[in-house]
Image (tube, rainbow, N blue to C red; front, side):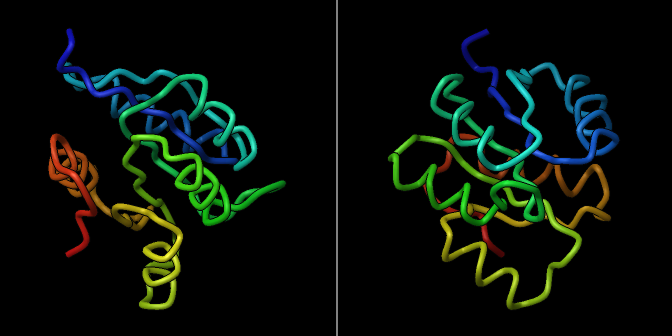
Length: 130
């Protein structure tokens, strides 16, 4: 049980959150500890729940994923952050890196791609940028 990675899912779209939950709860070494609908909730829940990994949408109301990532990093929380976005161009990747994200996955990517990034981050210190 202690090897299970604790995940927080952050996305303002209910269908995305439910889809990620359905996919990730099938993995025995993952535990979904919470969900958030915006960046403000993400920062609060990151402190309360202390997840190992956060799946962070970029475009959300109240506080976007980049600023939420910055705030979580500024708090010094030991969490790895995977940015989920529909825009994976070089500018978006650079902004995500500068904010402190460990990886970026395009929302249209395969389930296998997301799982591969999660596996890359497991047990590693630092980003998994390719």
